[in-house]
Each structure stands twice: as C-alpha cells, then as structure tokens.
Image 1 (tube, helix red, strand yellow):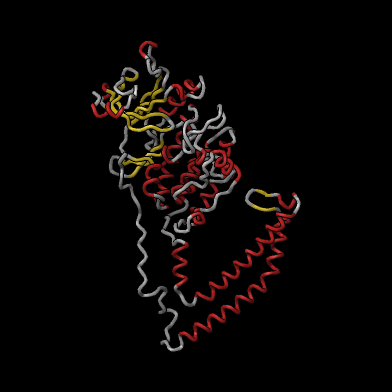
Image 2 (tube, helix red, strand yellow):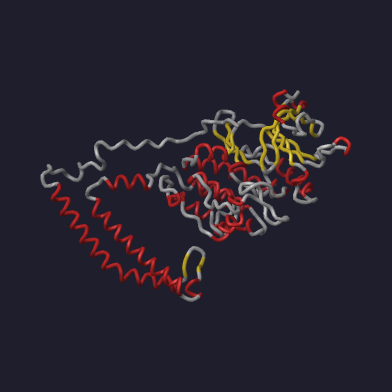
Length: 439
C-alpha cells in the first residue's frame, strides 16, 4: 500500500503504485539521477523491500540497448562480492498500448538490495576531503568488487563517487559497495558535466572520472576502471577531481594529454604520504601499460604501502621552520636557490617560445634531451653567483640575529624551543569514520 504522503510527493510519477513485473510494488521514490530513477519497492513473495531502478525507454541509446541491458544485468547478477550491490532481478516493463498513456512500456528495471547509507559523492559534497587511511580503505574495497567483475568479463565504465555506496556491515564495520555495473553503455546524454555523456556508441561514462582511452572512444579493459578509481582517490584526497573545467570536451582533453598535479601540490593543506602519491600518479598514467594492470595489482600495491601514518602538511612545516631562529638563513638560501631555478625555467620558456619545432617537441611528461641539456648549462652558469649571494645574505642575517640576542642568556640548541611558548597547539589528526548514514 502506497502512503498518501508518498503519492503527494510523486508529482505525477507514472510508476508510483504500479506493480512492476508482477512482483515489485512501487512504494516510494528514493532519488533520481543520470542512470534513471530509484524507488523503494516491496517484493511480497520474498517478504523484502528492494531498491528498484527504472530506466525510461526514451533514455536508451539505441534499439540494441535492451539486449545489452539483459547481458549486463545477467552478468552483474552473478557477482557475489560483499563490496558489490546485489542484483536480485531485472527485466522489461511491458504494457498494452491502451494501458500505457504515459508511454512507459519498454522501460527497463533492475531490482537490487536496499541499503541504508550515503553515496561517496554526497559525503564529499558535505564533508570535503577524506583522510588518506580511510580513502585507501574505501578504494581497496571498491577494487575487491572490480576484481571479481573483471574476472567475469564485466567492465564498469562509469565509476564515480555517486556509484560508491558507503554503508555498514552486519557488525557495524564500514563497507563500500559498487553499483551500476555496465549501465553507462545503455543510456543517452542528459544533464551537465557530472551527468552521463555518450556519443552514438563511442564514448560512455562521466567526463571527470573518465580514462584517456575511454575519452577517445577506444576499446576498454580493466585498466580503464583502475584509472577511474584513481581519479576518485584523487578526489577524496584533495576534495576535487584533477580536472574540473565546465566544458565536458575540455575535461576529456585534459584526461587525454594533461598530467595532473600531485595531490600535495594541488592542496598544500593536506598531508598525503609520498609513497601513496607516487602510486596514485602511476595509476593516473595516460598509458594503460604503465598503470597497475588489474584491480588485484592495484590492491597489492596499496597493501605494500604499509601503515599510512599522518604526514605533516607543507603549511605546518612552514610554520615550524618559520619559528626556528637558526633556520632563517637557511630559508633565505632556499629562496635564492629557488630564484636560480626560476631563472633557468625562464630561459627555457623563452627558448621554447622562439625556437623551432624540434625544440618545442614534448615527450609525455618532459622536454627533448637537447632542451634539457641547454637548461642545465644555463642553470650551472647561474649557480655560483646565486650561492655566493645566499652565503653573504645568510652571514648578514646571523650577525643581525647575534646583535639582537647579545643581552639574552645563552641556551643550547638542544634546549631551544622550536615554537613560541604562546603558540596554539597543533590539533591532533583524528581518523574520520562513517558517522552519518542518512540518505
């Protein structure tokens, strides 16, 4: 029986109150997105409520989509990982023309387990970045789902935060579950940058999380899903995907040719272990052959990192260095050295702007060997003078500090405080769990 409040909220939804496939009574609408609309439905014979996803017939990309849906849904229903949302049933809604004033005949449905939880996408919007250890745990669980799917020939094609559901297991433990395997290949375009983007059977997926080969319409294998999950990990660590332009084509072009900044460069206020960053940049390599070659290989690489202890952020390190008197001259030397590097880069830029095509040629992630050699020569010429200036400035700074401290009692370097006594204590790094599970 459909509650009156649910009927009022239905706003003319033709599926409300229907019995789908002679077995699923639609009770309430839970949400809608690029993949269709999700309802709470009751399967009386089994005595359970299910999540019923319905894809309207006009959303299907071509006449063959129904056949592919049957194949994908059948393959997904065979997945048994605890990290995959269980599919109970699937089929097509068939109505006589006289009984179909809303033209819903031909729509497809997918009955899945109904879970209390929140999508990773919703959590990121509400709470922002995820602490590295928890982010790795979420990705690791999603990879366990993908590993089984890939072994059975199922490629997801549309991994994104909205397709990762965060819930809890029987004993209260946090669990990540993957949903919507293979559905991306069935639907036509609708909505903005985060909605599904398709082009006549060539490009399927969500641009912000799309692999380079997917953006080019090439054939896909497990390594495409590995890349997409790497983008999700990047999003969790930094609070945003690596490429966020409002134009879907521009975002896809970036995935094809632009190397993203490391997470610690994109966000200076986060502490990401260097080993995790190195692995993530390998996962996001444009060449599938240089990524982990399977979901299981990605899991092994994550496990090899060991415990991910909290890392001091660059901002915190700068604060500590800035309060240590003896570090002042060294810091000035670093700044002068940075100026030297900047000068060398400036020469590089000028040469590239005026040189011929051979000097402009870029290899993925680097310049030609001739360009690099020239840059090193220029920087080696600048180095002696820069170092001499650094030493002079450092000496002057030490003299000035010596005069200022002449009346102060002597203290050993071992007992000198690293921070002022009245400095506010640095807040302890707290692991973030799954505190909220509201839809």
